[in-house]
Image 1 (tube, one colour):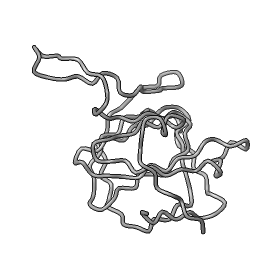
Image 2 (cartoon, helix red, strand yellow):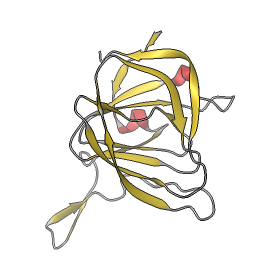
Image 3 (cartoon, helix red, strand yellow):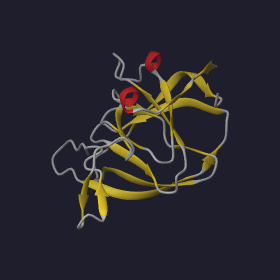
Image 4 (cartoon, helix red, strand yellow):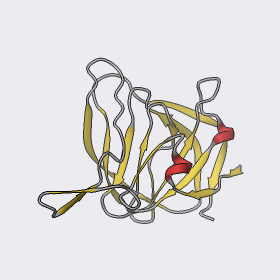
Length: 166
């Protein structure tokens, strides 16, 4: 078993895998006669293939506690996927680049602690672990490709990785 170090999420560190959705530190402009700040296009929806369309869904992630075992990843080859918390709950984004064998490159496996005021948008084809909500359960907005085309590949990892929260 290998220990996977938990990193704080930042736009620069997460850039190879996707986008951080966060108002703090982002540009905004006033709308609605100055009563609202719009943080415009914090992430882009990627849709691949004819007839592709984006959907907005809600999801509930059950709370998890440390230690957390990681032994598989998934990816969505036909579109990006965003996870945006509604109730300020933190979660973990485990990601890896694509390897030469079209499987996760485990040498680049990383785990990011996503604060409750942040969301992530995984780029199309980014290997990532399914949602890991910390502590209490979390409510999330999910923005991704929805249609009948298969859009989820899963891959077991060659070994197990442990996130202990340190």
